Amino acid sequence: MRLMNSKPSRLMRLALNLLPFVILLIIYTLASDARLLENPSDKLLPSWSSFADAIQRMAFEPSKRTGEYLLWVDTISSLQRLLLGVGISALIGLVIGVANGMLPLFRATLSPLVTAISLIPPMAILPILFIVFGLGELSKVMLIIIGICPILIRDLQLRTQSLPVEQLLKAQTLGANTWQIMLRVVLPQVLPPLLNAVRLTLGSAWLFLIAGEAIAATEGLGYRIFLIRRYLAMDVILPYVLWIAVLAFLMDTILRLISKRAFPWYHGKRGEE
Amino acid sequence: MNDSSVKKTSQPIIEIKQVWKEYGDHIVLEKLNLSVQPGEFVSIVGASGCGKTTFLDMLLGTESPSRGTILLDGQPMPAEPNETRGIVFQKYSAFPHLNALENVMLGGEFSASPLLGKVFGKQRESLREKALDMLTAVGLADAAMRYPNELSGGMQQRLAIAQALIKEPRILLLDEPFGALDPGIRKDMHKLISELWKKRGLTVFMITHDLSEGFSLGSRILVLDKPRIDPHQPERFGAQIVYDIALNSEHVIPTSIQSLIDKQATAKDAVQENTHE
Image 1 (tube, each protein chain N blue to C red):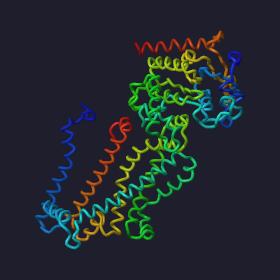
Image 2: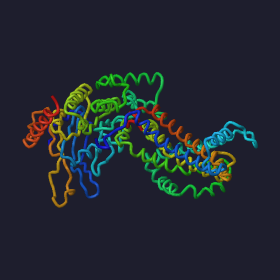
Image 3: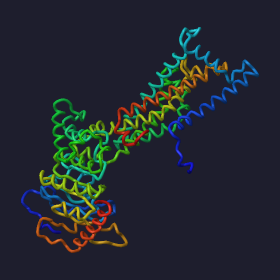
Image 4: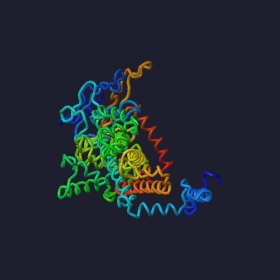
């Protein structure tokens, strides 16, 4: 049989899914053992037991200096910034995106501005944000908003414009005014794409969050990683990175499930997304 | 032009007077004159690209005539679509995020609630009942709770018709409504639309590229074509109404059209034999 036609069975697929992870773990363990054998105080590839110690120390013991459970404090403040930034961006993206997509007068006014802003690399204006909004929470949330909002606006605008014109005409023959069409015809139909767009921009949102925290913060996952980098504390950095990945995965999964639950008509049409 | 076929008994519902439609130098339609009485079923046929759709767009209100006037009930046609004209497109007429019942209720909700476009409680109950009656009338009572993507092509068109009829529009526009359907389903739809037309006294304009469909459904048929063609400048002359035939009168169908119908009918029979029964 041709390679392109051979499909794995369920069990086989699961095994294949896991295979790369297992290989990576084995390589890591071998490399770590080899280095530690040569120099027991090597910091680059810590052993599994020092990971366990570090996790225990960060997550389940109060910090000696502040008495806080650092991992959870970091997680809460990072998530707060991220959700605030992404939430506000989604809201702005929805409102401006739909208005841009539906109203030619609006589009003519705002579309070039949005395009222009989206061309500015957000990291380049990070110093401006710190100068304008100070070193507090606001500047970090603003960085996320400035980073992902233009993408969301443009995506939502495209989604709105790609609704079949027949639907909008039909709604008009049913006696609807612009506002009613926006509310009952357009809005419900761009919510699932909005969730998808948010899922896709979550990666960038994390990037901007960690960048912002690395430069000015007093707690947060990105702050912690950059702080302990000074001590080459790989035993803490790697679990933190994994934890961030887990959080990102969970958020993605939750958004996907919400979309499937709330918009069955959308997923029925496109199958699994 | 064959105006004698029109019975001038009451005020015409649609009156088209010396209408031209051009885009820059490109003349699409020219010298359109037409008067349609309430209750007529007007089929509009013609080669593709001859301006059938532009004609319908002008009736719908998305295009306005370059010259001349279109009157609806003696009043100038509003320049944008509204409740006076219902439409059924070939597809995408139903809203995918609403089930069949909600799709039909939507029209009533728009007029009852300007701010939210959604009604609740008793008002909703009465709209629901009305919508269910309408769904029953088009044969969709069992599918009321299903989303459009769960309906077959024919059922989606039934839904689109129900959606339009619930607003009781003055005229119903059909834009190749059955073009995407299988021949067998199409026959059922012909029966349905004929029935609805007779029972409810609708005034219908239907575009079709299927001549025999136009002839069997319509009470009057308009043939659009370009009588003059400049080979060097094809957009110099627009299409006109070259035939306007009342189908329930004694008028003789011109042989040129008759032969076209026969040709189409045999072609269609051949297709049907291949695909059905």
